[in-house]
Image 1 (cartoon, one colour):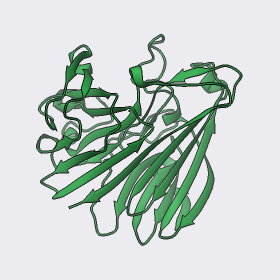
Image 2 (cartoon, one colour):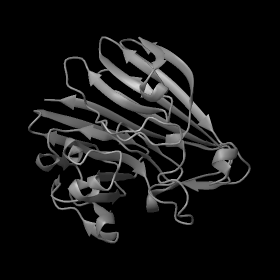
Image 3 (cartoon, helix red, strand yellow):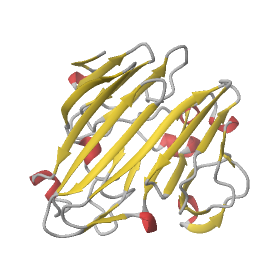
Image 4 (spheres, one colour):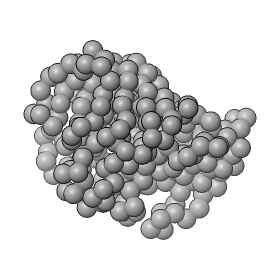
Length: 284
């Protein structure tokens, strides 16, 4: 059901193949880069320009953002979205649950992470690959002082045309518009993309649906212990500024992310742990 094989750029990945689904998960960042339920098309977008190199983020898939989101507030030199998405994780276990495969990976604080963030931690990413894709990110405080962090499962959902999709489930939710100086706004109706979009929806734990009429499918996104949701697409202008994204590839994805960012960040006391969960499924 699951084996560790060589992936792009010589980086190792876990290849999963079950009767219910197929998936690829790189040890680099513990990052899912493909998930295809049986009888369905690919659900996860991966850029053809993506770099597969040590120290570089993979463009697409489901990067893990931790322990901050976007730029680090007090250090512009720190890596965007934290340091674990460019870190080599280890495989703790490969297990079978009926027709699903469960891949568990982990990483922890070391000299490289302490350069940017002084706290002691352990992260476990438990990925269940089946007819549903379930992601569980467990953060543990292994040090002697409390710490505060942000996190996101930065999912690039593959779509036929970003201009034609809509995201339902956020009507009436307050959000910060990062394209418009983080002004606070309220969502009216479904989210429909018409321009560069980088919205952080706050204090919402509701399930969402990404409706793609051109692919004749609905991607359902449920989450737990996640109090914010990010919707992002760089649009044409933003795509041109990203070296690892094709100029026209912005049309092929819409990011809808379970997260805990800005005012919804998490504080952990020594010995405590926190689990954020996202479940992705596909319907007609």
